Each structure stands twice: as structure tokens, then as C-alpha cells.
Amino acid sequence: MYQPLADLLRPTTLDEVYGQEHILGQGAVLRRLIDSGNIPNMIFYGPSGTGKTTVANIIAKQTNRALYKLNATTASTSDIKEIVAQLDTFMAPNGVLLYLDEIQSFNKKQQQSLLEHIENGKITLIASTTENPYFEVNGALSSRSTIFELKPLSGEDVRTLIMRAVYDGEKGMGMYNAQIDDDAADFLADVAEGDARRALSAVELGVLTTEPSEDGKIHITREIAQECIQRR
View 1 (spheres, rainbow, N blue to C red):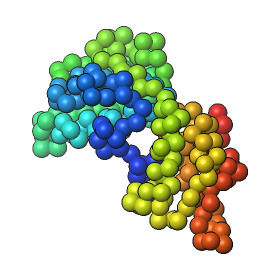
View 2: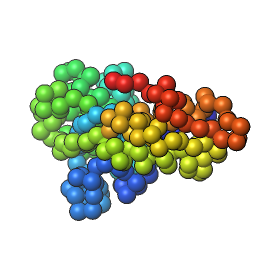
View 3: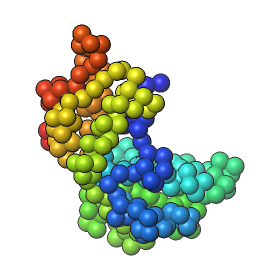
View 4: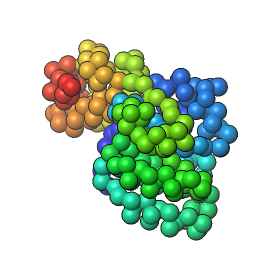
């Protein structure tokens, strides 16, 4: 099954996560929480492509809990009830982490239903949103959650990921014998505006749709980079 480049390069440990040192660096508060194994209900908010889903995956792995993912734009209360039915079974012996993306899309009734299921502590909620949770999330839910802001990646961090994407032969596009011009990498790092996924998707599109030159290499120029990424 085809996996997008951004998924192939998704960090699997906290040390591999870029751009969130303020909460995940050594000694930072979220890092301490994860290392302790005592995971509270949390809300991650910040722009797309900053690692919200990635951090949830790492938390589930490090705490050895079942991770269920829902997107609030399409999920319903019945989906949550199905997850609740897994509690205390061999499917979830250590409890459940529920990752709910775009929680602001849940209406008040749905958010209230969710609150009832996390009150007993068997379901730990990790919600994410690109909106300010203090305005968009039920006050009772936000007051029972620890809120962390994830920030856009720096241009330098995005550029590092771009270079890895092009030249990494294990998880990146290295097998395609591609190379990227410096000004193309700089351009993508700037236009991505801190969104790692946008930059990596542009790299992937460029490599997969560009014919090799006479030297047998795929050259990603600034012009190709411009074709493969859209400005916001």
C-alpha cells in the first residue's frame, strides 16, 4: 500500500520531533509528563504540519496504550461508544488513548458526551485543533485538559527535513537518485510557512513527476519547486 512521504518520515521518538523544544525538549513540561507515563487529558493546538498527530502516536507507543483516532469532522458519538466498548478487554488492557482531530468540529452535545466518557479516567483524551481551544472547545472539557501550543517549524527545521526527504535512501526519496538545488530547498522552506507536511508533499511531487536528466539524476530546481507547492 502506498504511503505518502510525510508518513514515511514521521518521527517515532520525541528526539526526532522538530520545532517543539519549548514543550518537548529535555526538561520541558510535556516531555516530563510523557516520560513519567502519567498522561492527563490534553489538547494540542497549532497550525497544520507541526506534529500534533505524531506526538500522540509517540505517547501511545511509550505508554503502551491502545490508540484510537477519530476526526471530529466525520465522527459521531456512536464512534466514541464503540471505543468505550473496548475498555477492560484484551484490546485495551492499559486503557485507551483517544486522539480526536479537529475537536472544534464537535458540537456542544457531542463534546458533552465525550466529557462523560473521560470522567472515569479509562479514556484519556488527546484532542487537536488549529483553532484557539479557549474559544472553540467546551469549557468543561478544556478545564479538564492540559493545553499545549505547538508552533510552526522554523525555516531551518523545514529545510533540514527537505534535505532528508530528498537524500534519505531508507525512508526518503534517495532511491530515486534525486538532488535538490539550494535555492529550491530555500524556496520550499520559506513558502511552507512552518508546515512540514506541505514541504514534504512538494518534494514528493517534484521527485515523482520529474524526468531524469542526461546524467541520470532527477534535478529539483526552483522552477520545479514552484510548480509543486501552492502559496496560501
